[in-house]
Amino acid sequence: MAVDVLSAGKAQLPSTARSRSRRLAVRHFKLTLLLPLIALFAFLLMPVLLLQLYFSFHQWTVYLGSWSEADFVGLDLFQEVLTDPRFGWAVVRSLAFATSSTLGCFVFGFLLAYLMYKPFRGQAFFYIIFILPMLTVPVVVAYTAEMMLYQSGPINDLISKIIGVDFKPAWLSNPDIALAAVALLEIWNWTPFSFIILLAGLSAIPKEPIEAAEILGASKWRIFWEVQLPLLRPVIFLALVLRFLEAMAEFPKTWALFQGGPGSATETLPIYIFMTTWQYFQISKGAAMSYIVMVLMVVIVLIAIQLLRREKRSLDQMYELRAKEAEG
Image (cartoon, rainbow, N blue to C red):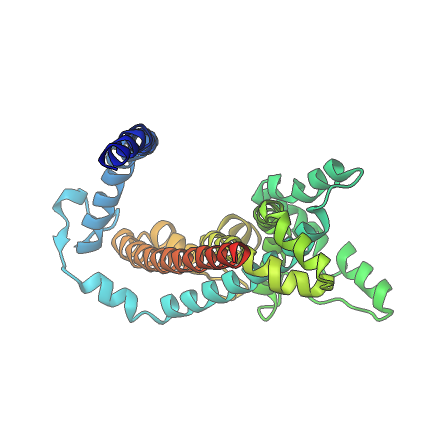
């Protein structure tokens, strides 16, 4: 009996050694990937962040001579930013813009992904067509839209012919719809991003649960709602978070079309920070605003990571439960 136990222990040693070796190899691979990123952060990004932090605590503009002689003002700049009504409205506009454009990109991206995830003839052609908007330079998108969205332009003419009513909203001069116009451009420009992520997620769903549901007579809607959607939740969450963060930073299309106008209708956070720093030359206030926005984005990312981990744990538990049910 003792000999059998000893033999079993020896047999397990190579397996344990291989497992340990595999973990070390994975760890080494991760470090190899991280080292260039750490070096990039240390030598390129860190000096910029430190200089920006210096400006956030020192009052300086380009008219005050050397930046190294700027007066220390403590937290005064942060207090000024947080009590600035324009900054508050810029936050509101950015959140409204990012939320609406993210949801639009998700809806259209999901519909396209669901239509495309099963192979069919000519799929590659449609795939290229669908991702073309994302490959278009944002400034080109903005100037093309400017020509298309004139009050007597082709977009309004086309809509008028479709609905049979003279439809000529002033997309480029009406402050009530200017931000919505940029959101529509953002949806057109970045729906392919959501489409690619969601298509990859749909394609990676195991076929076995779907086939089992079909054998049991489940309808396509029930299969989608009870099988595909739960398995796709982490991918959906990732697509929403990445798209939201990018939309919060949108600048080129908004600036090329409106420069924050009409009035202040499109004065989002990136626009207001740019105007404060490079038009009003309030370098220190711009730096303080940038740090506040950066902290806000870091908080959103950390919350998103925690929620994504929770979704992954929930998915792993569901897989384990189904595996036990299959064994039973």
